[in-house]
Length: 300
Image (cartoon, rainbow, N blue to C red; front, side):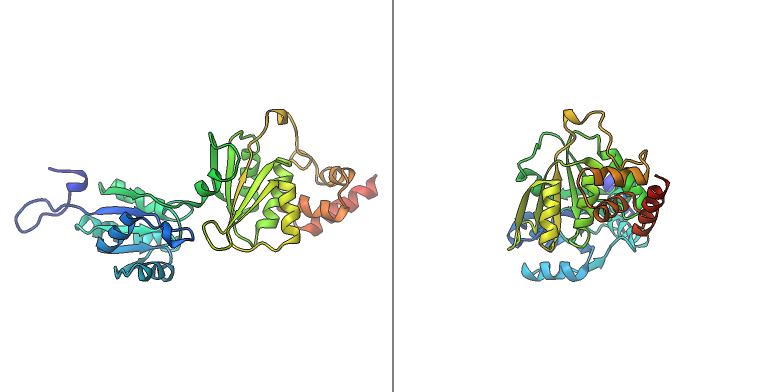
């Protein structure tokens, strides 16, 4: 009996019904001219499009005069909607999945649908196109021979600290995504966890107000302390340099909260800023760090 993409229920002729194809279609990260001819054709030919945000995708389809039905598929319904999509594929329908911007499966639930499709023997075909991480990397001026994509940092404080500690030893260029609302806090955490490294902040890639801020993590921090961050950011940061071997950040988990703050004060930072940075790096309330410092000073 046939298996894989030819598998499926038997039709009236008794022959196996051919399963559909799942297309992973890249969409523009800003400039609509980055949409490929192939992606436009496929989005117009499939039976339906699974979209992270149907409102956003409907604007894209309207621009290219496409009227393909949309299906909502996002992180909150992926486990219920995924099997429904697989059934349609096994029934012979070709479907496409798209992200709000860029390649589906990168920082969105597309990966789960791909896994389900492969398990079901459905053909998965990528339709490549724009991607913010690679777009930022190639124009950053930093090393592109070896890089690590980390996407958005975990929201959970403990998991975020653990990931930052792990990435601190990587010698590859590091690529992160960040929203404007958390950019300054994230830069503070990166300086604290990794030290001051060459870094680039790429803002609103391919859009009208595309901007590149180049320097180090600390100069980026100073820049966005002065200028309010706007738009979506891709951060590209140099990996650990050879000369950094054996160095222990002053606020590493092995260092006490009091000693971490005092190390920054000794280096010339105000006590208020030192408390703020240590609190952000360790995911602690500022008041708790402040009280720890006061208690440490009393003991001294």
